[in-house]
Amino acid sequence: MLRFAVSPTGDMHIGSLRVAVLSYIVAQQQHKPFIVRIEDTDKARNIPGMDEEIMLILEKFALKHDQRKDQSESFHIHQTLAIRLLEEQKAFICTCPGEKCSGDCGAMSSGELAKLKEEKTPFVLRVVSPAKPVTVEDMIRGKITAAPGEVESFVILDANGIPTHDFATACDDMLGGIDTVIRDEDEMGSTLREEYIKELLGYETPTLYLHLPNILNNDGVKISGDDDAGSLLWLFSQGFLPDAILNYLIALGSETPKEVFTLPEALMWFDPAKISRSPIQFDLEQLRHSNREHIRMMDDKKLSSVFGFADADIGMLAKLYLGEASTISEIEPKIKAIFSPKDMSGEYGGQMKIISDIIFDAKPFRTFDELQAHIAQKSGLSGEALTVPLRLLLTGTEEGPEPGDIYPYIKSYILEIAS
Image (cartoon, helix red, strand yellow):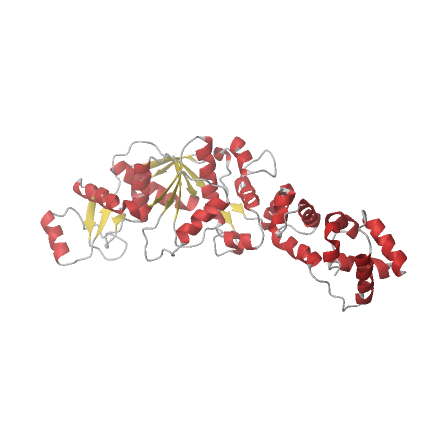
């Protein structure tokens, strides 16, 4: 069983999405359930509604889950397991101020504990330090071992009685039967602590880990939601397609049999064990390329719906602009310019008005050449005095694809456009 564990304390970013995508893929390949766990125990930092936003984003990327679980639902189970470790002398009460334990805290009698509670003396629960190395198995790194001194005595229950993140995560993974965990490489410390917690609780089922190398921004720092390119909301606002983002994230650090692919295709060949161990530089231009190719692959009628149409011709029209545009937000103003009222106050305004009147009085023309020849014959215009205002009337701009290439897709709208 695999899980995607995410905290509702901030917007999802591409690093989190990458973990979700790869966890989903492995779950599908191994025919195991895929669980979404909302790690909501930090009530003070939780953003209202963020959990639902996370679920909507997963749905947008077609990452179907078998179960959603909120970590706070297991709060009392976490506390019970923490107390069990205390009773088994695998954990102890610590009254030291700050994050470090002085080392003087040790076994405490029930009477001393009662006195602490009566006097309202703050205390936390810490696990005893491991007496032997802690080892985990990683898909791409092999065995990772931490010496006893590297995993210090850490807190499992805060002074307010709330389980710490590592303790709650270890308990939930153990109780949920999670046997494969995919996460970022900078969570290695948490992995070792969680594995130790499971050992203390007597959990013997092995867990296989995959610690993903970091995605770096232009400054060589791990990318986050604070980076524009790392923010899913920013990518959506710029017109990047979910399929293109998935394509890019799956290919990061991996060898793929083809450059452009879909999630269902990746399920057939993706091998998490072959992911590179080296950090990866985020390449926005490569993502733009992926996006351009996924727009090209889209069903024409479906693509037209993005621009408010239900016409395959408009989808094909949009694809004409892929030579100069890579995202929906870059194509949209070009389509809008075609269908917006034209400005006839400029240098070519007079000719545009003449051409517009001719078009409104003429019958429909099958080809652009026939239309242009008719306008030339009726108006007496030629050369740039004909081609430039005709282009402006049909496209709203002097740049872009040739009017002859555009005309087949807009001819049924010609009276609306030439006004």
